[in-house]
Image (cartoon, rainbow, N blue to C red):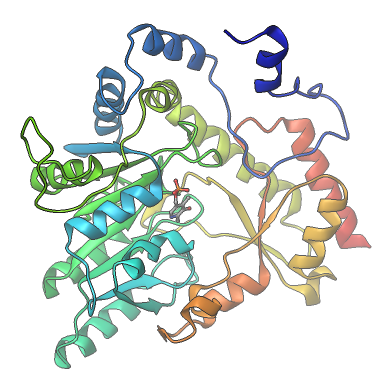
Length: 396
Ligand SMILES: *Cc1c(COP(=O)(O)O)cnc(C)c1O
């Protein structure tokens, strides 16, 4: 039994008063629904804590319902979901995996760890996601030279879906597997379908900064029951059904715990509301800033509806009077957290030997992009503080 003092040490400090004008404003903190404790309590009372029992299965069913995927596996993180996606596609040494350069490293890191060679492709300015025309040209070349990739990873960025319908039909035409890294896309749609639909496998993340959180966690989704069944086995140490431990392969301990599933279940119920809140935040930034010279906002691609998970903008230093990193520092000094746009993977030291097709769009996004505080719980007062600080920086 913990003493009261020990328990207190496990709890976070009390939150700062909501109207404290100097309180830090974070990029994308978790937003509680008020239901998490009740669902957690019920889960604890059931006696199930491990990645087994009713909570992960209930979360999977709710997630399938929310996204339209027929089969869902709840796992420990988005990176775990991507690892399983590459494993069930049998990615290994000598294989190529193609991925947009403008993304988070987890989109491809597990494939690299399995021995695959990454090839990076540029993104298009209208969406900041994988350029389908560039992919078409590169697939055509690769087919002629008999060097098609084992898989393509399309990535949703800052709540905007990749052009998945076009990308899926290209990949299908060449018999190349397609994974959608939809870690940032949950709640957004493309061609009228939820993020990730149309890919063989889609990976999602419930990390604390994503649109909903399970206190970490992820999901792998597919319409193919065989792929998810295989991933489920790999996620549980690749045990074959036998009373003793029997293995024909090696796997992982990647299951989502019941506690995470309970929190995720409560959060998922609010997904629609969270999208509306994030879109409203984006619209307020646009309204409050778009008259400033040198500022432009991430476009919404014609094929989809973005969740605006992060509100992202571009800064042209010639017009604005300061570059994106300068603005990031000014805001940080005022307790406002922002984040530069992704440093393209082809510019990362770890990938210095990898091929990149194009890359100037990704490089320009990195040079000019900045993500603004976008948490769905961001109060209007706090958002106006951000807008005022940016306007003051522009004048200075
Ligand atoms: C967050 C994220 C991931 C990884 O998810 P984790 O749950 O943090 O492992 C993968 N890809 C992209 C694009 C992400 O934003």
